[in-house]
Image (cartoon, rainbow, N blue to C red; front, side):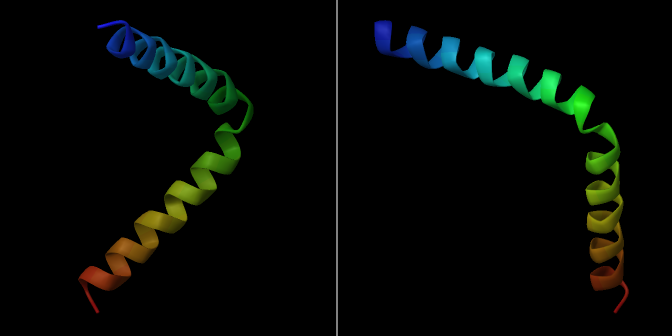
Length: 46
């Protein structure tokens, strides 16, 4: 059971870290996201 608890803590920490990082990298994220959408749409309607 402690194993599961540890994994849960780790996941929670990762999520918090991602939130903080996301705040910093929001513009970069948006660029990447837009590029991904473009790629997906291009593939869909090729």
